[in-house]
Image 1 (cartoon, rainbow over the protein chains, first blue to last red):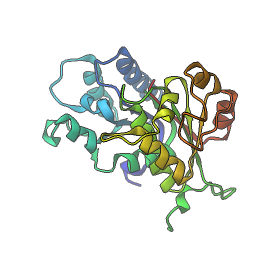
Image 2 (tube, one colour):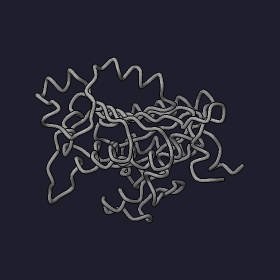
Image 3 (cartoon, rainbow over the protein chains, first blue to last red):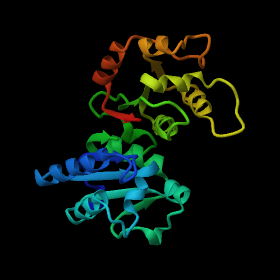
Image 4 (tube, rainbow over the protein chains, first blue to last red):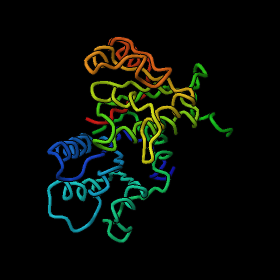
Length: 120
Length: 130
């Protein structure tokens, strides 16, 4: 089974920008805590959440995203919202997956590929 | 695999249930749009879908008229036409003077205890607007 098709223990759906709210950092910290407890995680960035994946940012949530990726998190980013924000694929950090069908993929991950799901 | 097959629980051949809780109103953020588009896509993929409007999320039900710009009310009507069960919190509705005469048709207004029942029935719950 490819890595992309493995069931994840917990999925995280992020709709907020990196420094829009302190919740973003806490949310990502929770994801890292899950990894520290040997859980596998998925992260879906949609709406303003896509800003997190833009490279060369100097903020704590973005740095934590890099750490999550290094630790095996599977990160999906909505193409619709990247386009709305004027963010090109070349502006993204490496290792994230861009989906051109965000709602199809969100439903699929929530219902079939994640055992539990958390949203903000 | 036939379309929809993988959306069933193998043990009882019932579709998996997704419940979406919306707690933020329209136009203040994209939460209502995302919630309703996700509900629509999930229903079309064969899942049983509930939408529960709570707190300011109840305001979406008030968008009855056509608009020349993006209208979450249209998405809500589309969701209802597709067969998604849409309910809204009674206390939240009364607090905002929302009733069956000034909201989109075919929305039930039970007490918030109903949401607990939806939680018990659901395979997954998504909250938008938190």
